[in-house]
Length: 111
Length: 225
Picture 1: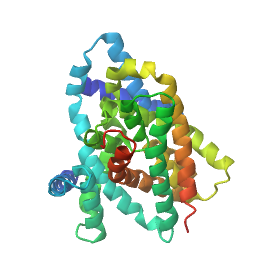
Picture 2: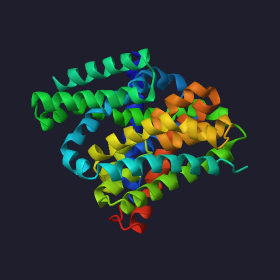
Picture 3: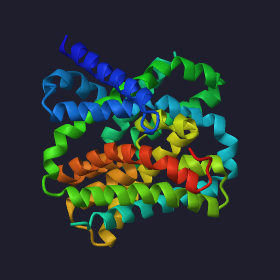
């Protein structure tokens, strides 16, 4: 029952986020990202007790990797595009990832 | 059928990873690869698979909201170290968002791929949500994101060692900013501070990229978002 109530809270914050996204179309955040921010703020402000969401959030996040597997499988539709540009994609991914790591490391020198 | 198959393949892939935790055997990557091969061999229509598996994808919405809870839990660990965390987060996110598509362009990749690659450091959970708003194909971006995660987890710690990075907060921030969930799983092996920094960076990088992508895409001539 606790997990269900927690899930209802998460959905409530998602719905709030959707509403806010519609109210503020100038801010490029989706309903779920707004929901994430609102949940963080509500917990920080003490407006929501952590225990109310934890019972749902923990098992839900445990399966996070599963939920976007079907989206990844959709890559099949782009098979020929990726085949044509495989070398460029591979090089951009590897170099881009290493550059991102170094940039983040450089930025983390801010004291 | 598609739903059960996806669930079973994913659980099996997790088992493989638990037995042999190598970044190349990342469960999400392994599951996607297995299902792609399975669909090709069986001739199961892709569209039907995607429709049947849609309920799983919908769970991403409350799951992204739940990341706010996860970030809130870890907030205390960064006490007094907010500046290096934010510096790493913004520098890394901006570098990924601008330099990756430029690299891809220089190498001859078309605009669709440039845009998908620009999101390579955003966690897939957020990308599925974000992509349509930015005119990016989520189906194209997600596999690239998984690969960027695998590359970062496989070579990241090695690169960070080479440049002498020994601060767990900086290492975690870099891994989470560049390689989202897969980098965070790797950061977990480096200790609790690296794990917290990486997990927070993963959630925050999605937020930062969502805000920065529209102007950056406009500047790069990629359709203005």
